[in-house]
Amino acid sequence: MSRPRRSLPTAPEQAIAPDLPPEALSRTEAVATPPASPSRPGADDATTGSPPSTETDHTADAPAPRTEADDTTPVSPTHPETDGTSPHPVDETRPLGRILLFGVQHVLVMAATPISAIFLMSATLRLNAGLTVDLLSAAFVLSGVGSLIQSVGFWKFGPRLPFVMLPGGAPLILFLAIADAHGLRVAAGAVILTAVFTFAVLPLFARLLKFFPPLVIGTMIVIIGVNLVKVGAVLVTGRPGEHGFAAPGHLALGMATIGFTVVFHLVLRGVPRQLSVMLGLIAGTALALLLGDVSFGHLGQGGWVDVPRLMPFGSPRFDVLAALPLMLYSLASMAEATGQTVINAEAVGREIDQRVAVPRTVRGDALVSALGGLFGMPLMVTSGENIGIVRVTGVRSRFVTAAAGVVLIAIGFLAPVTRAISVVPAPVVGGTAMVVFAVITVLGVQMLARCDLDRHTNTFICAVALALGLLPILVPDVYQGFPATARILLESGVAVGAFVAAVLNVLFHHVGPALAARLSVRPDLRTEGTR
Image 1 (cartoon, helix red, strand yellow):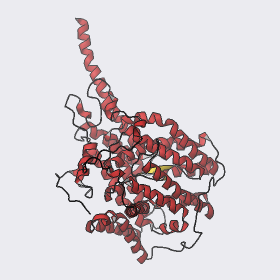
Image 2 (cartoon, helix red, strand yellow; image 1 turned 120 degrees about the vertical axis):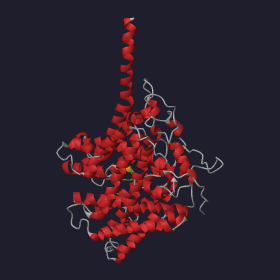
Image 3 (cartoon, one colour; image 1 turned 45 degrees about the horizontal axis):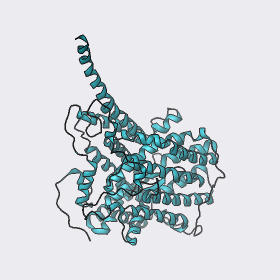
Image 4 (cartoon, one colour; image 1 turned 180 degrees about the horizontal axis):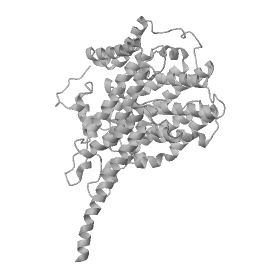
């Protein structure tokens, strides 16, 4: 039963999430917006955590330090709608049937990613049908295991937030390049080496998180959202140069799916409204079936059970030089994990310490990636694809994505289910994905809106980072004339945008004020010396 809503003052942040309770919205703002500090000279960096005085106070960029030993239980601010004893909405359990239903919604939106990743591997490396089926089974099982680790969490692994895990897009391309140049066994070994490398450099990366204030994180989130919207659009249109690119029928099917989702969200209430994304996808598939764009020819092929095969290419071979591209990319992946962890926590209204939660996310990625290397998979990464679903539906429980993990594992073992999901046409999945991913962009804009962009310095930092971060997304292959090693990082718009924003933030809000203060003191010292 829906709760009566209390009226709240109109605010831009509230307009994009009508399904969240007003109390939760107010809590989200309270968590994300620190109390205003007294104005003083040089306070241009108030929203970015820079020191107001000549002393360098880097701890202002982040909450007070916590040790990971303090994080053995979920960080759960009391829910203001209760008497203080009820769990945070992230930790709330729901009836099993409803949790599974919401979990299936997440799976339907994200299922195209592992399927397309394995089909691309199969086509590029010319794998036989049996090996392709084994890899597809492994992709679903590992995605499910990763989603469970990140959602439920154990020891120092998993941030206990509603996350899903998928085979990475850019890591897949690097995996294919290594396999083409050095063989599949070396590629599998490179994945394992990269996971070990991630564990090794994580302590150093965690110390740098204080240089990622909301201005930097918000810029990253906008770039991530735009990049994901492009991914969804490519599912609708196809790639330029391919046969049938931007076919009117495919565009119409994608737009119709978006229209169905909007109608369901407009007319439905309660639980059905929270399922509007899944209902829109189902309606789009039904329309595609009526138009003859759905093929059932492969549903009856193959057996009933698939089991992932351990070391399908043989024993991994370890070559550090061959693995170097993936190792370099892992640095960009850690930066992306930072942004996704922060925006996920903000979307569900949970207060986190970045220096605790982000390393837990990265460790989960590295652990599942190491397992993936043993099953012939590329790097596995925690995905931001489901954050939009969380925001659109207002269902914030991490047990929903844990249920999605269980469903993914079941799909990995049940071959007919995998084949049935693959029936959904790409334009339908793309239309749904565009809406969900665009919400992530809005969340980034919402975070930036709290960073006092009226101040010229903050606007300049954000503008330069967006320009350079969006360049490789909007103009693919712009760096094709550069050395292959440099392209690994330059072609990751998220990594470029995060690096530029972080460096400019340090220059303008840390180094610049310190130098200005030092120069202003020197004349006084010279005057004292003459006396």
